[in-house]
Length: 126
Image (cartoon, rainbow, N blue to C red; front, side, top):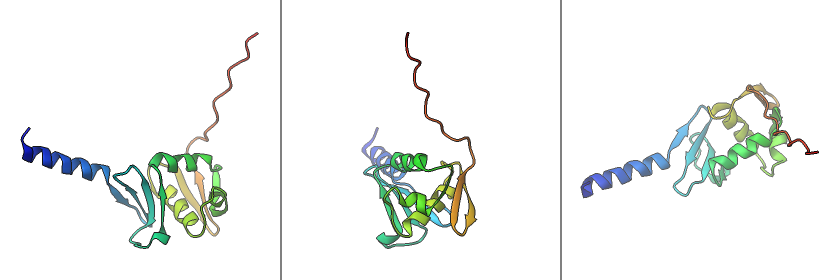
């Protein structure tokens, strides 16, 4: 591989790793350091964003929420202010989450796929 080809490949890999997707009201950005940022679409201030250590950390937050959830439920995880509403909207907009907004006041989302159930404990041996 030539040096020019290697440089081009490196640029393409960097772009793939640092992708920003915009949805209707929110955006999600994968950063080079592996973190994932949820922000209001088009907003520039840090007050309009929530940084997670990874997309998987955001997934774990979603998995801990009840089948139907509001900003109050998101707030129980330690997220405050308008970021709670922003996350509800992001869950409803991002295709990785089987969820939809069901009410605007109070802002409420509901999972549309099967509920997750914890794995069954192994049967006791006799």
